[in-house]
Structure formats: structure tokens, C-alpha cells
Amino acid sequence: MRVPRLFRKSFSATLLPYNHLVPRIQIINFGCRANQADGAALERQFAEKGFEPAEADASADIVVLNSCTVTAAADYGVRQVARQVRRANPSARIVVTGCYAQRNAEELAQLPGVEYVVGNSHKSEIAGLFSNCSRETPAPLVALSAPASLGPKATAKILLGDIFAHQELLAGPVWGAAASDRTRPNLKVQDGCNNRCSFCIIPFVRGRSRSLPLEDVLNQVRSLAAAGCQEVVLSGINLGRYGRDLDGGGKSLRLAGLIQTILEKTPIARLRLSSVEPMDFSDELLDLMAGSPRIAKHVHAPLQSGSDAVLRRMHRKYRARHYRQRIEAAFARLPNAAFGADVMVGFPGESAADFEQTRRLIASLPFTYLHVFPFSRRPGTPADTMPGQVHGAVVRERARILRELAAEKNLLFRKRQIGRTLEVVTLDGGSHQQQGTAAISDNFLDVFLPGERLGGNRMLPVKVTGLHDGGVTAELLPCANAV
Image (spheres, helix red, strand yellow):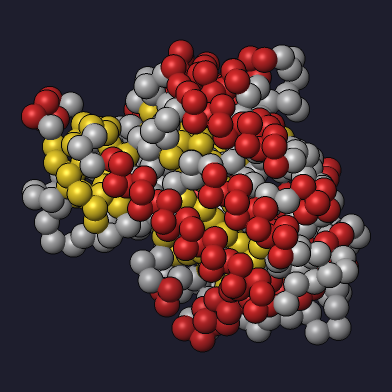
């Protein structure tokens, strides 16, 4: 992948006005948990320089779009939001960063109103583009004068470098999805990927696999526990590869060793794993998950396809039988766990027979939910130019079939929970605005507790009483008040 030269040395500083006594920053994150973690770290960096979060789009002095590029739809969404911000707040200074910025800075630099395009290679330097600010002695923002543009129509200033030379892991805890929800933070402990799946652009925009040092992880978890968090979600681009790049390798610096150390050296009540590649769900890791009540009973293992022929063209490192063995091994140890997978439909050359193999494999395994994605061509990946591109109507129909299958399996799973006792963490936010409390269970069910609204970050035992809006209803057990 060609990486344009770094223009940073040609910049010169100039002073620009700001709109408020204390400048306001808005960061809009797109895509995965890892990107959200990057955005949280940027928020912290700006806060340390005296910036305040903007309460609404129109009040922001600086808007950072932290982009995703995993699909063409993700690219379109970033461009659309950039235009919306420009219309709503013409005076805002727009910065586009993230994976799309790393992949195609030239395209983003041509968007009206975009002032900076900053690749992942220099994402950690964004706050440094602006001067220190404080309530007592506010200073004007600092911009960098534009170098010769990368393209004939580009107007934005670009910071972009070789992502494969990038060693830093930028991350901050990411809280709940709702703005008011300060529970269940995601903690990114790994970034980058050394795999080369033929459909995936992520290694070329995130770089090599790298891990947060063990002591840094422990310090973060301790801080979150001290802040009252009951559950922390460990995440990464390829989480199962945690520790393999750290000095002094060995089992203690693998994912299972990391989890065991967190359990031994921090008081966090519950850990949850985000997505882990199927072959990284080792027997050691599964035994640890089954043996500790402090690890959520939740297995998310990307499948992508149930056809060996398709998996081979995808450059995936397992076959359908290997995937089945890992899920069955997990289910034998964790019979009441949530089981989820990412599945791609319409990969080049996927025949009706290939799709049927995927459907049958999914139907035979204990999935409780699926993330179904149509194949999206990504320039620069081998799959982009493969023959046998599948027609869009066929792809949509296959996606519909799998989503309906997933809904059926999810309904059966929720029905099996009625009458069972589950442990939940209450959420600060939630869609129920009147009475009642939203919560999430150990086995990844949305739980609604009718009655008086409870505070967030409480771990409580409940009994499931029925079905509700894609989740379940439950009642507090008598001992809950003591928890």
C-alpha cells in the first residue's frame, strides 16, 4: 500500500479566533469499539488542554470525525456527516481522522469545510494542533498553514504517515452507548492485526498487532473499579492476539493470562470479552471463562462463512469443522452463554451451495445472535478484483434469510431464560423513559426491570419473568437489596 510522504515539517503556525471563552470540542465516532476507544482518548487529551465538550452540534468550535472504512457504506456515512456538520455549523473547524483518513486522505481533503485530515498514524497528535486553553487565560486556537495539497482539488491540511511503523496504542475507556450511560466501559487492550483476510482493509489502516502493557491494563481496570464500574469489556481489533508482541512473552502475556491476572490483581466484579477469533478460544481460555463467576458468559467468534471454499478465498485460518469444534467446546462448558458471530454474505464466488453450507452450519450451532454483513468491495484488497461478484439482490436475500434465522434462534434463547435467575448490571441510560430500569445480563440479554427506576452500576440478581422488546423482563430477587 502506497503511503504519501509526511507533510508535517512544512507547516507553520498561525493564530485563529475561537467562538467561546473556553473552546468546545465535539468528537463523533464511527464504527467499532476500538475506534470509540480512540475517540475517548482524544476527548481526554482535549480536556487536558482546557476544552469543554459541546452540548450540541451547532455550539462546537472543533468537530472531530473519527472515521470507519470497513465498508463503502461506512465511507458514505462519514462524508454525509461531514456535510451535515458543515451546514449546521459553518464556523466549525472540521477534522477527519481514523481509518478512512488513513486509507484515502485525498478524497476527504476535498470535502467542503474539512480543515484537517489526520491518519491513524498521527491521531494522537490531533489535540496538539490547537493551543492550550484554560478558563483563566484562554488562548486562541492554533492552525497549521496548508502545504501543497495531495490532489488538485484538496484544500485540507493532511497529516499521514506509515501506519506499519506506528507503535503507539491510543485508547481511553468507552462508556455506554447512551449519552447518559456511564456504565460498562469498553477498554481497548490491543490494536492492529497481522492477518491478511482478502476482504479486509483494516490491517492497512490500523497497522500491526500491538498490545497495551500489562501494568497499564491493570491500572486502567483498577481506576474503573474505583470509579464504581461493575463490568469492564475488554476489546481490540484482534483481541485474541493480545500480548504476543510484548517483551518477555509466554503464557502470562496471552489473553488467558491477562484475564487471570486481572482477576487476581484487581477488584473488578465482571469482565466481558468482545470479539475473539474462533481459534483463539483455546481450551485454557474456555476453562477460565467457565470456572470464574467474574467472567461474563458470552462468546463472540467471527464466522464469516460456513463454506470451506469461501473461507479459503477469504484467507481465513480455519475451516468450518474447526469453527464447529470451538463453538461446541465452548457450549459444553458454557451451556447458558450468549453465542454470537459475524457472518458475511455475497463474497465473490459465493454460490447457492456455499451459502446453504453457511446457513446449515449456523442452524446447527447454539447462536443467540448474529451480525450479518453484505460483502463490500474495498479498493486495495484482493477481494475487490476477484471474479464472481455476487448480484446485490442475491446478497440482500441471503442476508434476509440469515437475519430471520438469527431472530428465530434469539427468540428461542430468550424463552429458555424464563424462570431462570440471572445476574445483571443496571444501566444509567435506556429507552424506557417512565418507570423501570434497563440492565444487561451476564449472558448478554437486554433486561427490563419494571417499577421504580434504579441507579446504574448496580450488580443485582433477578428472575426472568417474560419477553420484552427483543429482550426479557425480570424481577428483583429478595436478596437484591443487599447487593
